[in-house]
Image (cartoon, rainbow, N blue to C red):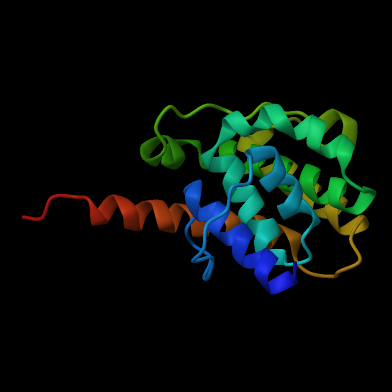
Length: 174
């Protein structure tokens, strides 16, 4: 499958699971959640990595698959998955009130990797300290120099913007 077709299939799968802020993906995808998690972590498109963070914010129950998927990935994809998962853990603590407003059955993601990666605990200063440390850790293991911290915040901004727009769409008009 070509990268463009693969990207479209992944965007379609994200749409099916409630992540609708990426363009494209008009087709259908029958990926299971663990397959989708692995495919997003392996894909070279940083926007799909950003969406991986949003997936965990919207679907904390998917945390159950993360350790097994990490074990199946190559080193670079495993780092990406651990970083994006932990970004969601920290962002969830930082944006807990707003996420509770939009997400039914809100559950906190378990902190699977802060100790293993030498990061601050997830609840320290509402996740902010951990998010900054995670960005520094993530940058050490990446071949691409860009602002990791900004990308974590962007994932939350895009998801919260999508949830706000959807809530307004269904709000009664006066």
